[in-house]
Image 1 (cartoon, helix red, strand yellow):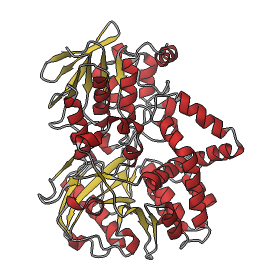
Image 2 (cartoon, one colour):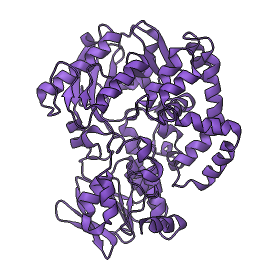
Image 3 (cartoon, helix red, strand yellow):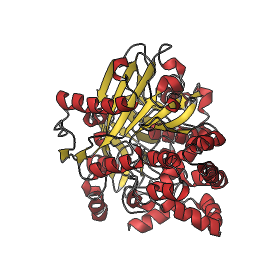
Image 4 (cartoon, one colour):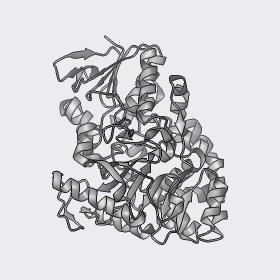
Length: 529
């Protein structure tokens, strides 16, 4: 019998398992899919000569994560690669906002939109250099972040600190209007905010857009050399080298609870795997509580709160094997690993408003990855391994476009939506469609079938909006990985600090399991009582 059972071999589950093994625990990881990785996987399923990242692809949060840094995955062979430019947002008239590798180069490009915006960008980056490292440490440690929080609080006590707090709370549209005279800087902030499910008018979207933009400026949007699966392979290699056990194709169907304590799990094939000290779940919060634990072991207040749990946007993704580089009208987009495709901030607002109304957007905001540009070994010379995704409502009420997409995602609807995304790219890159040698369509239901944590393609395991962050994530409580069941811990992106590949939820759960009688556990029990 192992000391701990970890449900799910996504990045958070693997991080948690590695930290427990480092502490001398015996650990068994059970994964429902035939292979580990969760949403960090790559394959050659589009074309045998092309490496394609199936889900996530660019990893600024991983590059900045102190959790992953401490694991020293370079010792397991993990290497990172960068595109010449981090991110680009082209406009139909050929202008292009580009997040370059160096802040001064980004600033120089933004000066083309408005001369004063060069200094405005440098000012935002100087603020990041001052508070960013402490902010990252605060985000990626268990809540409340005592040490980092105290240092940040000291910063925020100053008049400049109060202004920074206001800046982070702003909607990204307002932040862009306050900081930049031209459109370029506004585009970089707003496009980055929509990596989550935050409309340009949402409170706090300015803070998220600034965070992602500054991470891109300081760390880039790196990719694992050879594909996203290389990151998973490094985590698995480290786990096994430390004595941890990983078993794939083992679907956990329930957590065994005795006397209010998690003592193991049961699998779909009838096996019971005991756990002497802890069970950690890299699953969604609704799946853990409703499906694996059961209502009889949970307080009624938590069950009521779960009824208000909000998923983030659904996702629709396309992978391409292109016979040549994307022929962008705006030359600045060619060297960027990530490209945002939308008609300015107003186009982003229109897109988000349609999703809020339950409509399939007629002109989708497209987030496109040029993977060979970022890592030349992903496809033959002169070609491009590329992908794009767009967001959709979790529940579709109607189609704002002409195709009558309802969300059943049969072959007709998948083809229609893929064609709509490609038409949007074609507007900014005439001739793009003629370069498609092969493509793969991943509808929301397909993404969920490949990773159950991606509910209808929800990539952040719950909304990033303020009402479901910090002490509100995944439900109002303490923002901690402890659950009402003793020795059971939530180790997924459903827990604080949320989505992205950085390992913090898994690390927080592992630390809680290692110190089950600490101050944080006492605070948790007091609030749940």
